[in-house]
Structures are given as structure tokens and as C-alpha cells.
Length: 436
Image 1 (cartoon, one colour):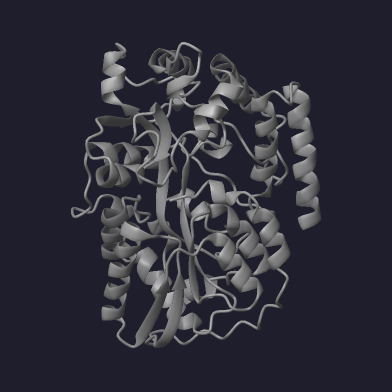
Image 2 (spheres, helix red, strand yellow):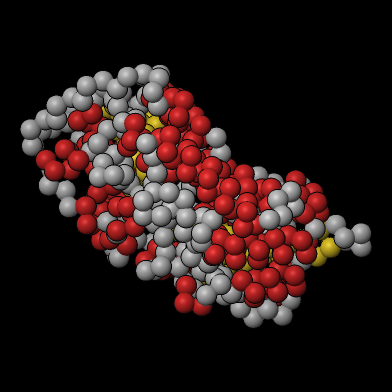
């Protein structure tokens, strides 16, 4: 899953740490058919139920490669991985929740280019969908592989919609606004008791990247510079969002948001019935089953401004790479290859943590557990207009810059939208120019 909130500040950390320790000379790769051996260390961010699923698949790997011993460290977020690599103490293999680090890691060599291993082993990367291949490479360098994918959809509380006389989940932004108002419950003084939809950016999964596909907004031009200011779809999305924020009242929304539980805990606001509709990833299915099994919910694609886009959504995922400080890159590649290209491993992982497989063959494997809700996310993943945020040499910096603006926009501090977005373009392009 993609940990949205931890993204903030990562770009600055990447910039600081990337050059701390000079990269060692690449080790020559072994001849074809070599049996991997020795010890390697894997860092990942998963915890609790999901970490147990990872432990299970690592046990399978070690059974297949008995000469490799894998030490697993869970609960390691991207900041820790970046700092460790910068200090020369990084793990052999790391799993990141953010595709946004790929461009920076490729550009700085934080993760090694896996192309020599791919070519030596004759790996056909077309076994993965194009969108997945696109976010795991940068400027011709394949420094990452996909470790399952995420698709973003729309969760709704069936009982609340039925009680409000809403027959179906909203398909358009106008329908979303109408439903949000019907489903909202306030106290006599106007305080929010239940939000039909909480529209604030920064709340749980409400980021510009996740909501951008509702309007088909573009981040970067083909030359890598910012497209935000010149794309009218961003203005359409922000105007729609601000109108709904103003209907609630910004201060009332912030007070309500402050009262809600942590996104990843059993106190998640959707799971507690404090919000009726939410944008979230496919992983929420497993959280609902585990933490709130009595909630009557449904899932659908994101509401869109244009009916022709309905069914699409934001695609992201976890990525895995071999650190430039890896002590045993050959065994590290063997682990990466097993986790990302073995159909059985992909299906077992998907069934365990409820993420979307990234091998085309695994998407239709008979042992992949697919119910009606998970099927919605598989359809979003396969939709021709679904997309992702483009990799950049500045990592997630362009999203962070835009995020700073939308915070000021939704609070009312910034009122001139075209001028504000033009300034966002300038700031992003200045950072991109410095990165080279």
C-alpha cells in the first residue's frame, strides 16, 4: 500500500542523503545459472498481519534457495531506508511504499540498475502491464521492480446510502457533492457529527495524485517540466473541492478531522461510520474484514467529471530494489526476482495482503482469491485511462510543492487559482532545473 502521509518531506531527505556516501563500484554479475548463496537483509514497512504474510513468502523463498539466509526487518519506512543507504549501511533489498522515490533512486544510484541481471536471465518485462513498468524505471534505468500494485476506488456505506434514499454510489462529481450533502449529519450548532464525504486534501488518502484521475489531470509535460498550471483539469478539480469544503465550512471540517482516529487503526473513520464515503485503496478490503467485519459497505470506481473516464483510477504500488550498499547483490537479485516474477509467490502475496498482482498471468490465476469487491479494483487496474504519477529526478518534490499550494487553497489563504498554479509551475520547474 502507499503510505500517503509519510511522503511529506521525503523529497528533501532524498536530496540530503543521496550524496552522503559515494557509491561503491558495481560488483560484476555472475555467469548465467549461478546458484545464489550467502546472507542478505530485507527491509520492508509492513507490520502485524501484513508482516506475517511477508514472513510466509520469505520462508517459501528460502525453501527454494536453501543456501540463502534472509534476515527480515519489518516496520522500516522509506526515511529509514534512505538514511541507511546514504550512510552506507543500507539493506541488501528494500521494499518501498512509494513509487515516487524511483526517479530519485535511479538518478542517484541509491538502488542499482537491474538491467544487467534482467538481460542475463532473459527476463521478459512485458509479463507486467505497461503502467507498472513505467513507474519502476526512469530514463532507461530499471532500478526497481513492482512488489504488488495498488488501485484506488470509492468505498461507500450501503446502509447509510439506503437510509438517505440513494440507490447507487455517485458516478460523477456533481452526484458526489449531492450525496455528500444528503449523508452529512450536523449538530444544532453546525458541528459535524458525520461527514458524507470529507473533501480535505491531506485527510487519509485524499491527495491530489489519488483524486487527479477523477478529472484526468496531468502532472508533467513530455519534457519533464510541470504541466499543472496549464492543465484546466486541475482548476476544475480544485474548484469542485473548494466548493464542497466551503459548504461544510473549513474550520468545522478541520475540527471534525481532528476528532477522527488513525487511518490504519480500527478507529478508521469509515470503519467507525463517521464518514459515509471515502477514496481508498484495495487494501482497505482486508482491513475491513479484520477490523470492522460488521460494516455493510460496497466499492465502486471513483466518481469522475467526464463519464468517459468512469471506471479508471489511480494506480500505484510498492516497489523493491537492491541497494547500492548491498553486500550480496546476486542473492539480493534472486530474492527480488522471486518476489516479483514468480506467479505462485505473487498470488500468495496478493491473497495475503490483498494488493493487486503485477504479473499479467497472476491477475487471472485460478488460485487468486477474487470476490465482487476485489474484482472492482482489478477492473480499475486494467482500465485504459487509469494512470500513475510520473517518475522524476526530483522524486516526489513536485507533488509536495503542489500539496503546499492546495493546503493554502482549501483553507482560503490563496484565492487566485490561476496565479497560484502558475507559481506552482515556477517553483517545480526551478527544482527540476537544479536536479538536472
